[in-house]
Image (cartoon, rainbow, N blue to C red; front, side, top):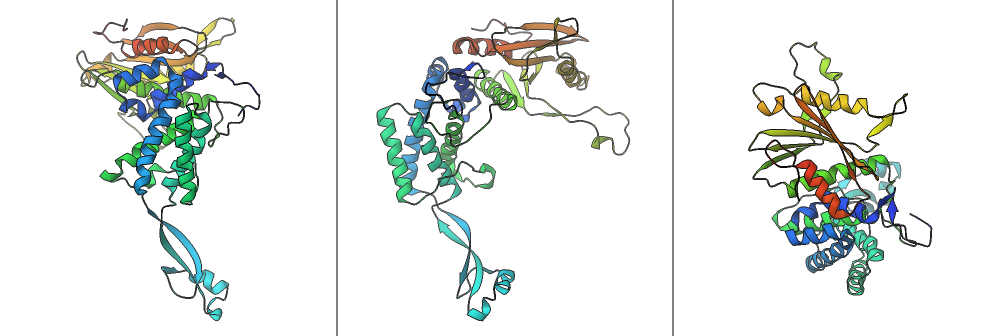
Length: 370
């Protein structure tokens, strides 16, 4: 975090409000908002913190009327058996001679990883809130958690927990907490302590840009006309192979595939987080060959006469950029390959318009979407 007294307004030359815009697109919250709410946030991404705070307070206040309990593992030296006996520890410490025994058992508690994660989110959110009423509500939530002696943790494994139908609200709140932790990263205000430290590396930005692109596509391209898949594994079409070849062949996994169901047009999109060009020995900007080879392999390796869209699929290399607007294309062996950038220094409305235009390019759909 910055130690400067003034507030930083950029992260790696990208305006903070546009980082928040990407966080909005990447979040599950974006998919649950109404159309008017989405438009309002897209036009004013800085309002995302206020909305997140309001939704967090509402959900947590409701949750705290009946906090969920859970079992945690405890190890303790007792004078009677409880749970399982830790024989090795008991023998090593000669506890039997003292009439004692070490046991491992489960205890029912409200100080669960889930509740600690929700509590930590309140501490992260509090310094970010400017609205006085929301600030007071957040402080009351923290006070309540402290009264109940529930700790804090910024780590939570969603996969390790079980959510029944009654736990739907818990899952919604936990997703909101994860967004709050991420929003704390680009704030960079003096005195604000982020509960989750993440280096703003190219990897971090690439993953955020990829998730934002996927989230934006799922919400803004109607499911009735578009089929969207992400993280799809592609297979090499093998005719003859040695026994162990699959151990050595590299995996092919796409970031995003968009298909228009009416005209069976398929577009494979691969997001990058580097400059779209590099200087060659002739000192002229050139597209990066390794990126082209990768996308070319995605397109040509999937050609199959029984799958019509695969034979004329479009490929797109999509880059986040600073003060750079490039949108070029070429047809190579019946496949259109596009090289495109999204300028993250532009106004949020323009970012949305350009992203929608690029993702909705199709043989039968106009590309000048408004």
